[in-house]
Length: 310
Image 1 (cartoon, helix red, strand yellow):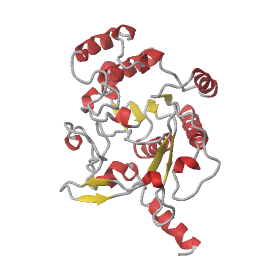
Image 2 (spheres, rainbow, N blue to C red):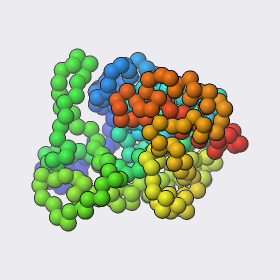
Image 3 (cartoon, rainbow, N blue to C red):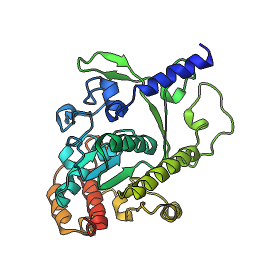
Image 4 (cartoon, one colour):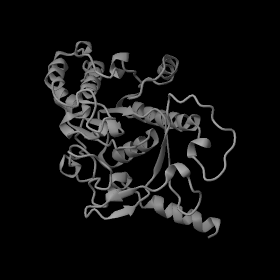
């Protein structure tokens, strides 16, 4: 296959992803529009827990929805009921309608691309609020080219539980606590982090966030965003210097067990007291993602930033 044919084939693949539904990798994995192919833990049956007609989690999208939420699996509510994640907690408090285009594994780049598709299909919300991953770099899996040792195929199961192998778009997630010196050479099979350093992810994240911030400002959309990971103080100050729309969470948010007394609003203190005695207040059922305590903390923090504007 010559270069022209390769370009044509790849452009054809891109052309097929015209709408917000096509950009949702959960639709592609399982093929049933409900994220059926995503490897999720019991006991939550995501297919029947507020998956809308476009395969996203939460209410149906509408031009009348006030808020648009962005994020990855933390905002999507991995291993939780949809009613127990921060977009629902916040929307209940402010009594506003919302759309949630977050998706497990998504990068800043993917979420911004989805946001612009949302604007085109459903118009402008009043607010765009994102809790995003700090450093992921998303790139397409291109078959029969380079074999990446860090991206070996994993089995996933369709609705009939027949094992099969599937590759969607791929992302790299960087470990912010890994201080190991990056290698100055590479050889196949590659580990993609050997030649896609964290700076490359941050470079493109800055481009995409800048585009989104400028667009929102030009169209009278209030944009507010942060990272769910703890960012060091120097980086935090540099982000505040560059972006009007960026905010950072208090250090308490990153504690393993959130302290109810640090919550600012009485509504969320009562909500946290309700959930504190239940399972998974500290950590999600998968023992990895945020527990309900942190979801409440996020909702409380965002509410106190926007409460005077709504």
